[in-house]
Amino acid sequence: MTGLPVAEVSKAIAEWEASGAIRRYKAVIDWDAVDEDPTSEIVIAFIDVSLAPARGVGFDDVAARIARFDEVRSVHLVSGGHDLRCTVTGRSIRAVSDFVSQKLSTIDRVRATATYFVLKTYKRDGDSFTPAEQDHRLPVTP
Image (cartoon, rainbow, N blue to C red):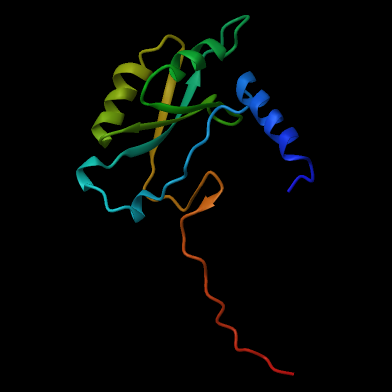
């Protein structure tokens, strides 16, 4: 696709993997389409966190601390009414709630949190989970 020799592309990919530029390869799975045990479902929540900044580090130290929790899938510094947006997973709403109340909100400089539970996923990582619409137009002949 690039028009470059395969050896050159392979070498570049190997260098990016070694340097950490390519972090990992992953599959994007539509879990609703997989016949799974319903008791093993995962609850996903977006948690907005308001922080008190610290001189010299801003929000970086708290963001790094939050990122170390196993329940946390992502942490982003964002603009708007809150400072961080975290994606958190758990086995139940109660598990996510316990994480927020017992671990996240007890971190120094965390002022407030707002939790939003995912009810349905329509698109993730650039992949749509909705069926493609069929073309219902009538054929036209010249």
